Image (cartoon, rainbow, N blue to C red; front, side, top):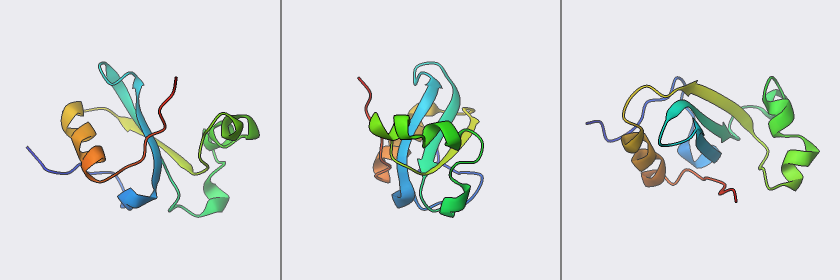
Length: 93
């Protein structure tokens, strides 16, 4: 089993400000992450407009570029890799 996850592009794990699975980690269809390495002028494109809105920020969101990709593979291994690389995750109540 690989010791790291492969992402479609190269973002530094340290640039991740949030990550999650939709609809849930136990039944993932999409993997979500938000990073700050992409140039700031791109952050509000597509789903970033809502994810970086004043309302989202007021609720605890951190600004950044939003990404989604299909959850194909071993999600437990992916979660372990996120944790091993110190990728941030905002816990919701």
